[in-house]
Image (cartoon, rainbow, N blue to C red; front, side):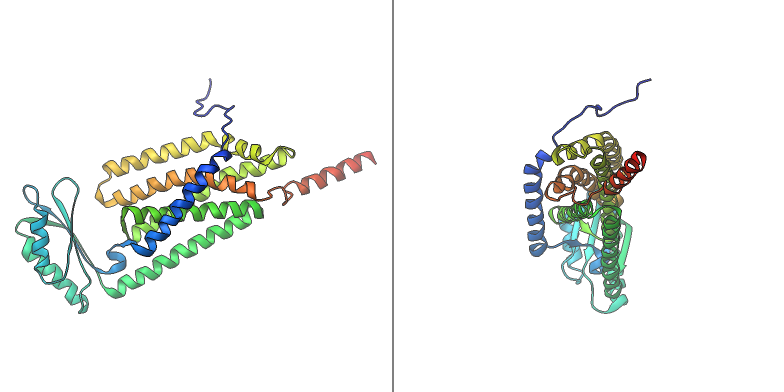
Length: 317
Protein backbone atom coordinates (compact mmCIF):
# COMPACT_ATOMS: atom_id res chain seq x y z
CA UNK A 1 0.00 0.00 0.00
CA UNK A 2 1.45 3.36 -1.02
CA UNK A 3 1.77 5.84 1.81
CA UNK A 4 0.37 9.36 1.48
CA UNK A 5 3.07 11.82 0.37
CA UNK A 6 2.15 15.45 0.87
CA UNK A 7 5.49 16.49 -0.59
CA UNK A 8 7.02 14.24 -3.31
CA UNK A 9 10.32 12.57 -2.45
CA UNK A 10 12.09 14.13 -5.43
CA UNK A 11 11.19 17.72 -4.47
CA UNK A 12 14.09 20.08 -5.13
CA UNK A 13 13.08 23.61 -4.22
CA UNK A 14 15.89 26.18 -4.23
CA UNK A 15 15.17 27.39 -0.72
CA UNK A 16 18.29 29.40 0.04
CA UNK A 17 17.73 31.64 -2.97
CA UNK A 18 14.74 33.14 -1.21
CA UNK A 19 17.05 34.80 1.33
CA UNK A 20 17.15 37.74 -1.09
CA UNK A 21 13.53 38.35 -0.13
CA UNK A 22 13.29 36.86 3.37
CA UNK A 23 16.23 38.77 4.84
CA UNK A 24 15.05 42.25 3.72
CA UNK A 25 11.53 41.40 4.93
CA UNK A 26 12.74 40.23 8.35
CA UNK A 27 15.08 43.21 8.67
CA UNK A 28 12.30 45.69 7.82
CA UNK A 29 9.90 43.94 10.21
CA UNK A 30 12.50 44.03 13.01
CA UNK A 31 13.15 47.74 12.49
CA UNK A 32 9.40 48.40 12.53
CA UNK A 33 9.16 46.42 15.78
CA UNK A 34 11.93 48.52 17.36
CA UNK A 35 10.31 51.76 16.20
CA UNK A 36 6.88 50.80 17.53
CA UNK A 37 8.37 49.58 20.82
CA UNK A 38 10.06 52.94 21.38
CA UNK A 39 7.13 55.09 20.23
CA UNK A 40 3.86 53.21 20.80
CA UNK A 41 4.79 50.50 23.28
CA UNK A 42 3.00 47.32 24.24
CA UNK A 43 -0.64 47.37 25.25
CA UNK A 44 -0.09 46.05 28.76
CA UNK A 45 -3.07 44.34 30.31
CA UNK A 46 -4.37 44.63 33.81
CA UNK A 47 -1.92 41.95 34.97
CA UNK A 48 0.98 44.34 34.43
CA UNK A 49 -0.60 47.78 34.75
CA UNK A 50 -2.87 47.15 37.69
CA UNK A 51 -6.45 48.38 37.95
CA UNK A 52 -9.90 46.88 37.50
CA UNK A 53 -11.33 44.94 34.57
CA UNK A 54 -15.07 44.41 34.29
CA UNK A 55 -16.76 42.41 31.55
CA UNK A 56 -20.54 42.51 31.27
CA UNK A 57 -23.32 41.59 28.87
CA UNK A 58 -26.45 43.50 28.03
CA UNK A 59 -29.61 41.84 29.33
CA UNK A 60 -31.49 42.78 26.16
CA UNK A 61 -30.61 44.32 22.80
CA UNK A 62 -27.27 45.77 21.81
CA UNK A 63 -25.50 48.12 24.23
CA UNK A 64 -24.86 51.78 23.47
CA UNK A 65 -21.09 52.08 23.74
CA UNK A 66 -21.10 55.87 23.92
CA UNK A 67 -23.65 55.82 26.74
CA UNK A 68 -21.70 53.16 28.65
CA UNK A 69 -18.49 55.16 28.25
CA UNK A 70 -20.17 58.34 29.43
CA UNK A 71 -21.64 56.62 32.49
CA UNK A 72 -18.33 54.95 33.35
CA UNK A 73 -16.37 58.21 33.06
CA UNK A 74 -18.90 59.97 35.28
CA UNK A 75 -18.16 57.59 38.17
CA UNK A 76 -15.11 59.68 39.04
CA UNK A 77 -12.33 57.12 38.50
CA UNK A 78 -10.66 58.83 35.55
CA UNK A 79 -10.76 57.89 31.88
CA UNK A 80 -12.24 54.43 31.35
CA UNK A 81 -11.44 52.18 28.38
CA UNK A 82 -14.72 50.76 27.05
CA UNK A 83 -14.75 48.17 24.26
CA UNK A 84 -17.36 45.91 22.71
CA UNK A 85 -16.33 42.35 21.96
CA UNK A 86 -18.01 39.18 20.84
CA UNK A 87 -21.36 39.18 19.09
CA UNK A 88 -23.84 39.06 21.97
CA UNK A 89 -23.65 42.59 23.39
CA UNK A 90 -20.58 41.98 25.55
CA UNK A 91 -18.62 44.97 26.87
CA UNK A 92 -15.33 45.29 28.72
CA UNK A 93 -14.41 48.26 30.92
CA UNK A 94 -10.90 48.95 32.20
CA UNK A 95 -10.50 51.32 35.12
CA UNK A 96 -7.07 52.74 35.88
CA UNK A 97 -5.26 51.88 39.11
CA UNK A 98 -6.71 53.99 41.92
CA UNK A 99 -4.78 55.51 44.78
CA UNK A 100 -5.82 54.16 48.16
CA UNK A 101 -4.95 50.49 47.98
CA UNK A 102 -7.35 47.56 47.88
CA UNK A 103 -10.26 49.53 49.30
CA UNK A 104 -10.10 52.01 46.43
CA UNK A 105 -10.15 49.19 43.86
CA UNK A 106 -13.17 47.60 45.53
CA UNK A 107 -14.94 50.96 45.47
CA UNK A 108 -14.64 50.89 41.67
CA UNK A 109 -16.44 47.56 41.53
CA UNK A 110 -19.16 48.66 43.93
CA UNK A 111 -19.97 51.86 42.02
CA UNK A 112 -19.85 50.06 38.67
CA UNK A 113 -22.35 47.49 39.89
CA UNK A 114 -24.67 50.19 41.14
CA UNK A 115 -24.53 52.00 37.79
CA UNK A 116 -24.79 49.06 35.38
CA UNK A 117 -26.40 46.13 37.19
CA UNK A 118 -29.98 47.06 36.23
CA UNK A 119 -29.22 46.68 32.50
CA UNK A 120 -26.18 44.38 32.40
CA UNK A 121 -25.06 41.02 33.76
CA UNK A 122 -21.54 41.05 35.19
CA UNK A 123 -19.55 38.17 33.70
CA UNK A 124 -16.03 38.86 34.93
CA UNK A 125 -14.42 41.16 37.49
CA UNK A 126 -10.66 41.34 38.04
CA UNK A 127 -8.81 43.66 40.39
CA UNK A 128 -5.02 43.88 40.50
CA UNK A 129 -3.23 46.19 42.90
CA UNK A 130 0.10 47.98 42.29
CA UNK A 131 2.13 45.54 44.36
CA UNK A 132 0.72 42.49 42.62
CA UNK A 133 1.14 43.98 39.14
CA UNK A 134 4.75 44.90 39.91
CA UNK A 135 5.49 41.36 41.11
CA UNK A 136 3.86 39.92 37.98
CA UNK A 137 6.01 42.13 35.74
CA UNK A 138 9.18 40.99 37.51
CA UNK A 139 8.18 37.33 37.55
CA UNK A 140 7.04 37.35 33.92
CA UNK A 141 10.19 39.08 32.68
CA UNK A 142 12.44 36.79 34.70
CA UNK A 143 10.60 33.71 33.43
CA UNK A 144 10.98 34.73 29.78
CA UNK A 145 14.66 35.63 30.17
CA UNK A 146 15.52 32.39 31.96
CA UNK A 147 13.60 30.30 29.44
CA UNK A 148 15.36 31.97 26.50
CA UNK A 149 18.76 31.55 28.16
CA UNK A 150 18.01 27.89 28.79
CA UNK A 151 17.08 27.38 25.14
CA UNK A 152 20.20 29.18 23.93
CA UNK A 153 22.43 27.10 26.21
CA UNK A 154 20.74 23.91 24.95
CA UNK A 155 21.30 24.93 21.33
CA UNK A 156 24.93 25.75 22.03
CA UNK A 157 25.60 22.26 23.40
CA UNK A 158 23.20 20.49 21.02
CA UNK A 159 24.99 21.57 17.86
CA UNK A 160 28.47 22.46 16.72
CA UNK A 161 29.25 26.16 16.97
CA UNK A 162 28.23 27.13 13.41
CA UNK A 163 24.89 25.32 13.58
CA UNK A 164 24.28 26.61 17.10
CA UNK A 165 24.76 30.22 15.98
CA UNK A 166 22.24 29.73 13.17
CA UNK A 167 19.70 28.16 15.54
CA UNK A 168 20.15 30.91 18.13
CA UNK A 169 19.67 33.65 15.53
CA UNK A 170 16.53 31.92 14.27
CA UNK A 171 15.04 31.66 17.77
CA UNK A 172 15.76 35.32 18.57
CA UNK A 173 14.30 36.28 15.18
CA UNK A 174 11.03 34.50 16.01
CA UNK A 175 10.79 36.24 19.40
CA UNK A 176 11.33 39.69 17.87
CA UNK A 177 8.70 39.12 15.18
CA UNK A 178 6.20 37.85 17.74
CA UNK A 179 6.69 40.95 19.89
CA UNK A 180 6.21 42.96 16.70
CA UNK A 181 2.86 41.25 16.21
CA UNK A 182 1.75 42.48 19.64
CA UNK A 183 2.92 46.00 18.79
CA UNK A 184 1.21 46.13 15.39
CA UNK A 185 -2.11 44.62 16.46
CA UNK A 186 -2.05 46.17 19.95
CA UNK A 187 -3.35 42.94 21.42
CA UNK A 188 -3.34 43.02 25.20
CA UNK A 189 -0.01 41.89 26.60
CA UNK A 190 -0.57 39.93 29.80
CA UNK A 191 0.46 36.70 31.50
CA UNK A 192 -1.24 34.68 28.77
CA UNK A 193 0.97 36.48 26.25
CA UNK A 194 4.04 35.36 28.21
CA UNK A 195 2.82 31.78 27.92
CA UNK A 196 2.28 32.24 24.17
CA UNK A 197 5.83 33.57 23.68
CA UNK A 198 7.37 30.69 25.62
CA UNK A 199 5.32 28.19 23.59
CA UNK A 200 6.49 29.82 20.36
CA UNK A 201 10.11 29.59 21.55
CA UNK A 202 9.64 25.85 22.02
CA UNK A 203 8.01 25.45 18.61
CA UNK A 204 10.79 27.46 16.96
CA UNK A 205 13.38 25.27 18.64
CA UNK A 206 11.63 22.13 17.43
CA UNK A 207 11.46 23.32 13.80
CA UNK A 208 15.10 24.41 13.74
CA UNK A 209 16.45 21.27 15.39
CA UNK A 210 14.71 19.03 12.82
CA UNK A 211 16.24 20.86 9.86
CA UNK A 212 19.69 21.24 11.41
CA UNK A 213 19.84 17.60 12.44
CA UNK A 214 19.34 16.71 8.79
CA UNK A 215 21.95 19.29 7.79
CA UNK A 216 24.51 17.73 10.11
CA UNK A 217 23.70 14.28 8.78
CA UNK A 218 24.11 15.41 5.17
CA UNK A 219 27.38 17.16 5.97
CA UNK A 220 28.78 13.79 6.95
CA UNK A 221 27.28 11.99 3.97
CA UNK A 222 28.03 14.43 1.14
CA UNK A 223 31.48 15.79 1.89
CA UNK A 224 32.01 17.37 -1.52
CA UNK A 225 28.52 18.79 -2.17
CA UNK A 226 28.31 22.58 -2.29
CA UNK A 227 26.84 24.21 0.80
CA UNK A 228 23.88 25.87 -1.02
CA UNK A 229 22.84 22.55 -2.57
CA UNK A 230 23.30 20.74 0.73
CA UNK A 231 21.15 23.26 2.60
CA UNK A 232 18.45 23.02 -0.07
CA UNK A 233 18.53 19.26 0.30
CA UNK A 234 18.24 19.53 4.09
CA UNK A 235 15.07 21.58 3.86
CA UNK A 236 13.56 19.51 1.04
CA UNK A 237 14.06 16.20 2.83
CA UNK A 238 12.29 17.54 5.93
CA UNK A 239 9.62 19.44 3.98
CA UNK A 240 7.00 16.68 4.23
CA UNK A 241 7.35 16.53 8.02
CA UNK A 242 7.24 20.33 8.27
CA UNK A 243 4.11 20.52 6.09
CA UNK A 244 2.27 17.91 8.17
CA UNK A 245 3.24 19.42 11.53
CA UNK A 246 2.53 23.02 10.56
CA UNK A 247 -0.75 22.27 8.77
CA UNK A 248 -2.24 20.25 11.62
CA UNK A 249 -1.17 22.89 14.17
CA UNK A 250 -2.56 25.73 12.07
CA UNK A 251 -5.90 23.93 11.62
CA UNK A 252 -6.22 23.42 15.37
CA UNK A 253 -5.37 27.07 16.07
CA UNK A 254 -7.80 28.35 13.44
CA UNK A 255 -10.53 26.32 15.15
CA UNK A 256 -9.59 27.92 18.48
CA UNK A 257 -9.68 31.41 16.96
CA UNK A 258 -13.10 30.86 15.38
CA UNK A 259 -14.82 28.79 18.05
CA UNK A 260 -12.73 29.04 21.20
CA UNK A 261 -14.38 32.18 22.52
CA UNK A 262 -12.95 35.51 23.63
CA UNK A 263 -11.12 34.01 26.61
CA UNK A 264 -8.47 32.34 24.44
CA UNK A 265 -8.89 34.21 21.16
CA UNK A 266 -5.85 36.46 21.64
CA UNK A 267 -3.68 33.53 22.71
CA UNK A 268 -4.77 31.50 19.68
CA UNK A 269 -4.09 34.43 17.32
CA UNK A 270 -0.56 34.89 18.67
CA UNK A 271 0.11 31.16 18.45
CA UNK A 272 -1.22 31.06 14.89
CA UNK A 273 1.14 33.87 13.91
CA UNK A 274 3.99 32.18 15.78
CA UNK A 275 3.57 28.83 14.00
CA UNK A 276 3.65 30.54 10.60
CA UNK A 277 6.70 32.62 11.55
CA UNK A 278 8.58 29.64 13.03
CA UNK A 279 8.00 27.58 9.89
CA UNK A 280 9.09 30.50 7.70
CA UNK A 281 12.12 31.14 9.90
CA UNK A 282 13.40 27.56 9.91
CA UNK A 283 13.44 27.42 6.10
CA UNK A 284 14.16 30.97 4.97
CA UNK A 285 16.11 32.56 7.84
CA UNK A 286 17.97 30.04 10.02
CA UNK A 287 19.06 27.72 7.23
CA UNK A 288 20.41 30.39 4.81
CA UNK A 289 22.43 31.87 7.70
CA UNK A 290 24.68 28.81 7.40
CA UNK A 291 25.83 30.11 4.02
CA UNK A 292 27.71 32.84 5.85
CA UNK A 293 29.19 30.46 8.41
CA UNK A 294 31.84 27.94 7.50
CA UNK A 295 29.83 24.89 8.57
CA UNK A 296 32.57 22.54 7.39
CA UNK A 297 35.14 24.25 9.57
CA UNK A 298 33.86 22.42 12.62
CA UNK A 299 34.85 19.14 10.90
CA UNK A 300 31.61 17.40 11.82
CA UNK A 301 32.99 14.20 10.33
CA UNK A 302 36.56 14.51 11.58
CA UNK A 303 36.26 11.79 14.21
CA UNK A 304 34.70 9.41 11.70
CA UNK A 305 37.43 10.18 9.13
CA UNK A 306 40.18 9.53 11.68
CA UNK A 307 38.58 6.25 12.72
CA UNK A 308 38.23 5.24 9.06
CA UNK A 309 41.89 6.06 8.33
CA UNK A 310 43.07 4.09 11.36
CA UNK A 311 40.91 1.11 10.36
CA UNK A 312 42.32 1.13 6.82
CA UNK A 313 45.88 1.44 8.12
CA UNK A 314 45.32 -1.44 10.50
CA UNK A 315 43.80 -3.59 7.74
CA UNK A 316 46.69 -2.91 5.35
CA UNK A 317 49.23 -3.73 8.04
